[in-house]
Every structure is written in C-alpha cells, then in structure tokens.
Image (tube, rainbow, N blue to C red; front, side):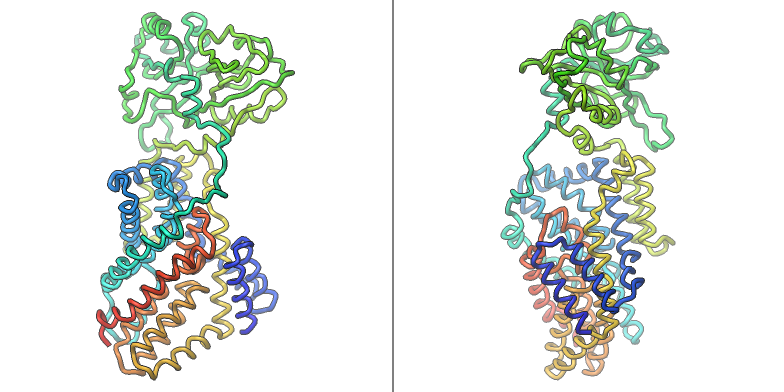
Length: 620
C-alpha cells in the first residue's frame, strides 16, 4: 500500500514539474506497479483495452474527419456569425453549446466533436485557442451534470439509490444541480481564462516557411488568366483526347484541369471530380475545362470548338457550390527551382517533358522577379528560374523525391493536408449525427464504443480522409497513452486497500460533526481522489461509503450521493482525472500547472457552493 502511495506521489510531482512528457511519466508509473508486484502485467495493461480508451481513439478519427471535410469550419462560422467580434460572447457560446451537447453525449465524445470546431473557430476569428480549449473540456463535464446519462458517476449513484430502496432518479433529476454548476462555471472561467490562458505562446509559434497555395496562385496571377468552358454534345472536343486536338499548338491556350460529375460508387452525393489535363485525357460532353491563356485566344478557342464560356458565378454542372477558381483537393501547385547542373537548362518547356514524365503542367516561370505566363511552350528554361507546376498531389510528391535536377520549394504536401474536402462535409455530418443518435438513445442496440468505431471506419471508407495515413495522424497518441497508463492506478489503489483506508478515515472522523460537515468531507474526499484516479472509479469506491454514512446518521442519502457524483465529475485540477481534460492538453499546449491555475479555483468554488446548494435541492 505504501509503495503505491509513493509511486502515485512521485507521478504527481513529475506531472507538476512538466519537464518530462506526461505519457512517459504515466508509463513509468505503470512499469513500477508491475516491477513491485502490485499489479500483474495483464492488470497493468488493462487500460489499453478499456472501452474509454478505444472510444477516444475513434473519436479522434471522427473529429479529424469533421475538420478535414470543412464541416468544422462551417459550424464554427455559424457560431462566429452569432458572436460577431465580441470574444466574451463567443466564449460563452462555446461553453453553452458544449454543455448542451454534453448533457446528452458522453463528455469524451462531446470534446472530441467540438475540438476541431473550436480550433477552426479560433483560427478564423484570430483568437488564441488556448483560451477556449480548456474551458471546452470543463464545459463538457459541467453539461454532464444536467442529465442522468451525462456522465458515468450519475448512473452509479442512481443505481445505488434504487438498490437501497430509495426513489429512482429521473432523467432530469440532475438538471437543477447542473444549472448551478454551469452558471458558476461560466462566471468563474471568464476571468480565469483571461488571466492564465490568453498569453501568447511565442515559443510554439514557428516562422512561416512557405507560401500558402492561394498565395502562390495569386502571386502568379493565375485567376487573372483563368477561364472555364463547358463542353456540349455538339462541340468538336467531345469524344477526343487532348493530344488529338492539339489545343496548345492551335489556340495558344492550356487546359489545366478537367472537372466532371463524379460517378464513383463511394460518393453518396453528386460531386465534381478533378482530373489533371494529360495528353491522353478523353474529353466528354458535360466536362468543365479550366483554361489558362489570354482572353482573345480563349474567345477564339470557344468560337472554333463550339464550347460555352461560363461566367464566374455559374455553378458547374448540376453541382452547387464555389466554382470558377482553382481548387486544391486532388490537384495542387508547387514551385520548383532547377539545380545549376540540371539537364533541363536551355530546354524549352515543351521539350522538358514534365507532362510526359511526371504528369505535371508548367503554369508559369518566375525569372528575376518577373513572371512569364504567356507562350510558355516555346520559352527556354534558364538557370535560376522558378517554375510553377500543377499536378495531382501524388505526382508533386514524386517531384519532391527527385532532388538531382530540381528542388521543390516549401512544403506543398503539408499545405495540401490543410486543404479541406468540402464536398465530403454532408457525408461527415450524417455519420456524426448517426453516431450521436446511437449514443443518446438506449433502445438502439449499439453500444457507444461500437457507434464510435463504426463512425470512424465510415469516415475513412467514404473518403472523408485522403488516405488512411491521414486518419492515423489525427490521433493524439500522447493523450491516449496517458489515460490508458493511468487507468490501472485506480485498480492498484483499490487492490492494496489504500482507497478504502483514506475514505473510511475521513468519513469516520467527520461523521460526529453533523450532516453538513460530513457532506463537505465526502465531497472533498471525492475531489481529492478524482485528481489521481478516474472519476468513475472514485464514484464506485465512495458511493457505498456515502450511502452507509447517511443511513447511520438517519438522514436522506440523496444529497450525499449527489456530492459524490458532482465531485467526481467536477474535477478540473488535473489533466488525467477525466478524458476531456487529457484530450485538450496536446492541442492547447497546456502544462500540469495550467490545470492547477484555472481548474483548482473552479473546483473549489463549485465544491463550496454544492455543500449549501445540495441540501436545499435534496433536504436532509
């Protein structure tokens, strides 16, 4: 028992110190529990198979898909429009929206869903995301006190009361307590977050090393010479390849890309697919061609080939949405600089073989701060030229691999990862709503963890990620390992009798001073224990103790059990006491001390308030 206490205390010291990563500290503690024989290897590793941990992995994937498809940006823009430029109003809206969802969905699920939305919102509103993410985690726990299913401790005390023969708690029995907690939370978090979470983290800011894709397109003025034409049945282009037509040679315009309504079976909605214009690309009726060239040449091309020149506002085909500008979903752009000894020096663009060998087009040349965008096919490549290339992201990646002839500037693939797949947003929304519905309604025979796993798989299978690797990259493994490694600590405390010893000592010593003092003792005992072990484990350990203590004093045990549930759920002073706290630790770049500074005052204020509020709602 004493060994377990020493390991726990050392872990807390290293967590607070913050010099060693929190997941490494947790793994070291886990290893020590095995080495000293406190836990068997299977017991120590049980956290990695815990449903909460598996659910967190799935929710990271779901949250990542919400961000990748642009759904987060759409939702955040709605909230931003409601808040306007008032940062405090935005802060309150985030808290209330998160608490509202948290009342019906697990707090872990709530944070995972809201996390990408809030990050996107902070970026759009030029707000420090550190100020929003920790309150987001706290708000999910505050909202969890609103309903019976909001958090596991609520279910635990409801079962305990019913088993003891007391009146069953209803779905909304917790709502008055939840409203009080939420009100205190909003009032306390507004000043605390401004004081401790709004400072700029300059150490984590990196200097911008590369231009964004839109900046690159604007620099070369691509939009000024970009035109769209639609191919109809009577056009001479329909049914022919680009090579057969000789468009560049005959009309002095370049086809950059072809867009057509996707016929893929993976698409549940009609979307426009992008295809790079290659020599063997077959043009079909209904295709939208993106042309680069002077207006006179494009106009001549339109008249000769009987295609329709589209204005900038006309939607493409039957698909509504943004059109008339370059998009970087499947096709991207990048700058390359030729090496001085490159074999391409003094070759013309048409003889360089970029399209034939790498499947990319040359859109422009930057030479001595001047841009060459016209008549490129006959332009010779000189040493020191910057070439703007366009192609699929796979082909641009191939260019990056060949460093002997040229160097790809910046990090185009990193920029590509920032491009949202907006046409997949409706699919992501349907999957997300389906997952939430399965988690809310008990009559649906799908367990919450199963619903999350299915949602994550569907996000991948329906193309809400570019590839599976992108899905794996959304998982914050530090948070996963931290929770999985700390969960067995509660088992060690219970197995060695440490939890029972501490609980009985506090309750037995305070019981003679009256129900209010005993209520305070139970509440703060639960609070202290929840800082080191999971809130669910704490509620299981203290629930029977609180019940028996109330019965011995011949008072109504409801307020005592509510004290256990509230104290177990309102634990904000530690990053690993609840999964939501751990979820935001990485994205917010928080330290253990950040949780102490903001979470501990909130935890104490709610605790003091509950000692007086609970007896009013549930009299002794």
